[in-house]
Amino acid sequence: MRQTVTVDIINEKAINLLMDMERLELISLRKNWDDTSAANKGNVGKYKGGMQKQSIELVDKQLDELRGGWE
Image (cartoon, rainbow, N blue to C red):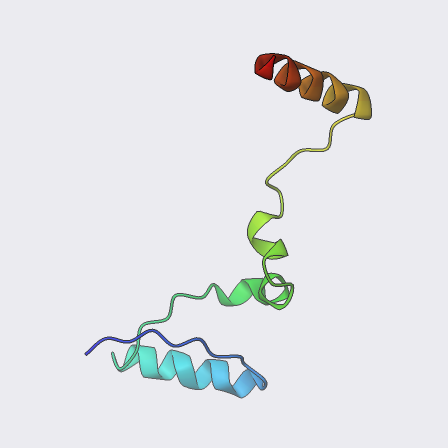
């Protein structure tokens, strides 16, 4: 039997318990525990770093090019 469950950690001791359970091959952990701040920010953490900062002029130029493709 295999189920997926999402857990909100409210005490750091729980992480150690989960890791112990994984070592005993009772569960399998998928979460990267070093990235707790991203998990607390919801979907923002998933996309952080996905775009590079660009000047407004470059963004306007790219938008004009995209709009031109629709005409």
